[in-house]
Amino acid sequence: MMDSPEAEASAHSETRGDTTPSTSNTSGQGEDGPKPKKAALKRTTGNPTDAKTKKRKKARVSRPAQLGYTVHQGEDMLLVISSSTSQYDGSAWTPPKKGSKKKKKLTKGKVKASQIKKKKTVRAKPKVDNSPVAKEKEDADLFVPKGAADNRWGQSLPEEVLVNIFQMVVIQDGAVPFLCRVARVCHLWNAAASSPVLWRKVTVGHCWIAPGKSQLPKTEKKVKDTFSWLAQNRFSRLRDFSLCHWTKNVTYAVEVVSQYCPHLCSLKLSYCTGLTATAFHSLGLHSRSLQSMNLQYSEFQVEGLLEYLENHGSQIKQMLYTHGLKSDRLLNAITRGNCPDLELLEVNTKLDSKHCELPICIQALQMACPKLKTFRMLNVRPLHKMMRSGADSTSGFPLLEELCIATASFSYMTDKDLWDILFGSTRLRVLDLRGCSRITPSGLAALPCPELECLFWGQYFNSNVGLSSTKKGLHMVTQKWSRTLQQIDIANQLFTEEDLEIAMSHLAHATEPDTLRSLNLSGTRITPSALRPVISHMTALNYLNLSSCRYLPRGLKRIYRGQEEIRQLLDGLE
Image (cartoon, rainbow, N blue to C red; front, side, top):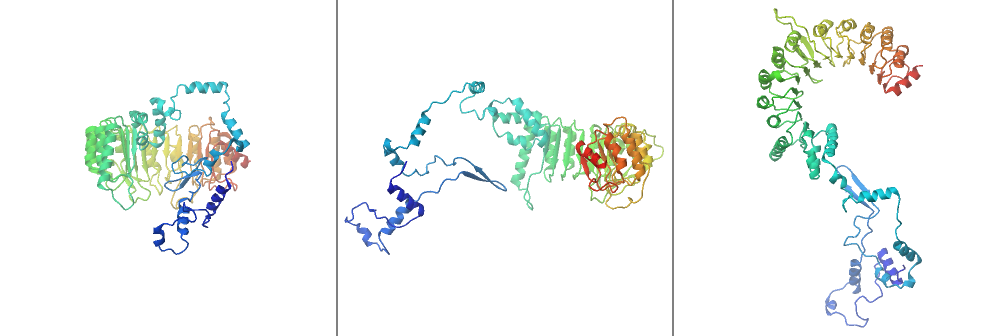
């Protein structure tokens, strides 16, 4: 619909921002009408109509065009959300379209044909869809209340289904803070998030504090109150609890968990400081089901733990801690028989630690812990101590399944030391000797374990000392365990080309081609002729490390993952 020429001229002048005074009457009186008296007393610098014209034009300035998008500011970016209509449509301040009043006064004869067509389209009756899909949708809408179609899944979803969905997230991301956040959505989500099944394993991380600042008293009290509320209202069936990177209130947290969690089985403190004897005393009084204690990379009062092991060590089956200057007494307490049912013992140190030597009497440990299944000494150098004369002979570790003596520097371990540990371990499945350069193939072949599945024997030194001499005898190791080996790591072991070819032939002629799954030959002298039969025969091999293998063609010295890449390597070797 076209506007009048006067309206178009007025709109055009406003669009250009033209300030030229109009020739029309702006005072509301005739040209010869009387002037206001107060206007004559005012001092004017120019045309007396300029101020009124400018004031009137300022009041009639139109607002800018509405944007077709919305900008939201996040933590580290600006999010632009486009939309077909502005978010301000229908608001009170939206200026009316010009000429709208005149459009209503126009006669029917001046209506365009396009508007008549539009009116006909609006008045047309909607078509009826009789398809089966439309009928099914219409029937489904009968059971949905009006206005609730978008939220029906959240209002009518069974609580058991929602608990299962939360369980998947908890397994992947943990219970905290996910369950605390979804509990604030609605009553249904709160009831589902309160299910004790979801709170069986909880890990609580550190409370974030700005660098260089300490925790304020109000924040500390809030942390304590929140933790106490969770323990009283959510941890009724808690079994595994982990506390990470807490430098304050560690003793308070352990005491609260021990008091309100009667089913606590596992306690893990990682990079925590300030654990006193009071916490261990509380664990002894309340946590009768506690079986596993992991205190790696945490500072604790050794005297309190020693007292706990003397009184309640019989219920502990797993003990993990980091070796330090005062922790030698802890290992001595274990070898004295304070933990007779111990099944897992792990002692480790940091890679940059200077205190790596660990005095240990293997024979005394074998007598004190006959049920030991997993024994790990990570990045420590065990110094074997002789047992006092007159002691009864032991049967070793008859139930041992995993032995790990891995180190990144150097090791004192010899064939005799290895035999003293494993002479009675016929059930051994995993043997980790990374860094043990003094162990020989003949010493490995003499071990009494017939079904070894994982052998990690790679050399990962910080320097090249001890890696220059060649070795022989790898074929004895592969011949002994070719039927059962699933993972082999002999990285940087300088066996001869002939020895490697014989050893790989034993693996290639194994009775079960789907046994070997991982093979690490990085830094070895493996040749294409020795590698080809293993790749072609082992159908389950999905990891192959050939990096830094100088005897292979250029372009093939890399890591291969999956059967597809390994088959492509076989084509390249041919």
